[in-house]
Amino acid sequence: MSRNGSIEDRRGRRTKDGKPMGGMRWRAKYRTPDGHTRSKAFSTKVEAERWLDGQKVARDRGEWVDPNAGKVLFCDYAAEVAAGRAHLAATTRERDRSYMANLVLPHLGKFPLTAIAPGHLRQMVSSLSAEGYAPATVRKAYQLASLVLKQAVLDDRLARTPARGVDLPSDRNGGEDQPEIRVLDPSRVAALHEAIDPRYRVAVSLGAYAGLRLGETLGLGVQSLDLLRRRLTVTATLTNLNGSVSLGPPKTKASRRTLALPAFLCDELAAHLAQFGTGPEGVVLSSPRGSWVRASSWRKRFWHPAVEATVGRPFRFHDLRHTHASWLIEQGAHAKAIQTRLGHSSIVVTMDTYGHLMPGMDEALAEGLEGLAASADAPASFGNLALRN
Image (cartoon, rainbow, N blue to C red):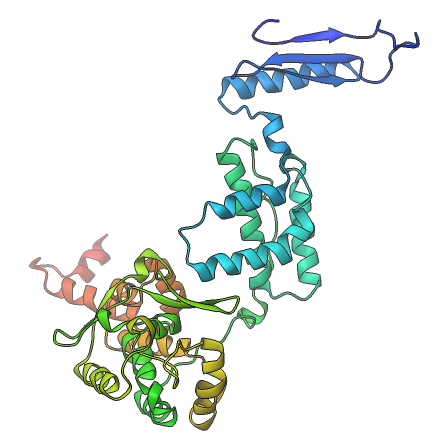
């Protein structure tokens, strides 16, 4: 067989009982880049030639993919991809596992990779939307399916991902499926601070004046504090997976950060430690019994009653982080500084989340440019120059 392959005419062949062989009467063969022989039968010679030409072009372009490599079931390959994402936070892995198991695999799990077409993904998106899932949830399910299929391309199991040409649902009414961001002024934060159990007042301050996430707050260890230099380093987050509470790494690499603290917050942390001590593994916040603070029960017993008594529901602990960001913006902080302080993975995340809180930024930039123009040494004004042009 030549490098370009061959086509075998099987029309004269007969079956074991002597009858003429019907159906696929032409077999195309070619040699793969790894030296193996692959073949496929067709009913006409034209079809065989077309397929063989396609294999040759793919091989010459370096785009050839072993068809056997894509026969693995989507569910099995998705598990392999998930195992390779061990660098993600435990909470993120658990969330993705749940989405994959409950939303994606019922639609794609039993298909071989090579059998999945864009239509299957469109059907998945349509079905999830029809079942009433929020647009953000449907988009996340599609994102996870697409991630698996794109990895299959990188692993030479697919020549091209079928995750293309799929219309995804947009947020209804500008994003009503997303929790509304609420921002408080300092006086209302102070009211919330006073309303919550004294054991957890410092948590309110850490959220509003340091911008910590709840898991970072509950996982904050005394060893991460340098109160003399007014520094706090985020090195861990408290996670609760399937009823098991433990300290884990921060959400992302960028989440591991060192923050400067206002003096009053350092004093409050010192007073808190003097009154309540530390919990397991030296965490700053602990339950009245001295054990881990479980976020779900803490919200129910302490957070929600304090919110209802002061600022009114809905108000999440994460809204204290949003409040912190809005205060930084009001003070004129640069978006990059806000990104670093909040531990966002990129400035895009910061701008997407808080860009709408910066309505005066463009005007301020224009005024700055006006000042630069006014300070120019040119004898003619820019206005007159523009008129002459």
